[in-house]
Length: 295
Image: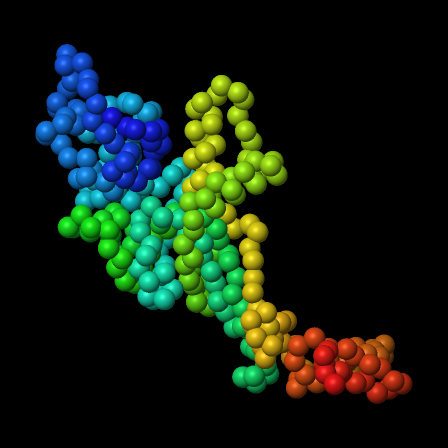
């Protein structure tokens, strides 16, 4: 059994990553190699590469970690990466169509309250891009025990993250609700091209095949918390807010004996009943707040 492509450390194997090919009989080591007739390619799907292999190299038995082996999850992690588990409901997890090895974006939906239930801002933002799914519940392979790739509703998902992103996700869980968005394989390739064009990713010298492999590995698996996008309720419905609610109130009283602060009526906070973008009109000592778009 040989690798059909370069397999970096931490790669979760799929059936198309392995195949049998003729090998000189005198070089075959049955105690170390997987031999046709004695080994099954499908049975190794879901295993993790412990030792990096080049395309065409024999797969040794010590180079793979089985999902049932101790230390499987640690072997699946890339250098400097961490694993974090997030609880999800059926609708937050793409209805079970996320499998180990897929890449997802993580979205945070939160509510910013103002004075009263009506005066609040609903917003959803994509906080992390290109997260690799390591496990779904206790399942670490895309196929079930019967060998079928069947969507299954899950309650938790374990993802590969950087230490900083792990901290951000831990805080995000306290702020609001987390949801997954399944990524297309083509998106990863296009983002790698943008990263190279912007200079974020350096391209190795011509002929440096190993450097190119490392670049592709980092570009296609590295999560990113840059370039977050956000959608507020006002962009979905005209009856929702676009901006964070402003709280009404008065300025704190000056200390006893102190000179009065140099304030103007225009500095006063707008009445709490006004929501959304507005224009403040000052006429002498009278301040009027007019909502934008009103008649």
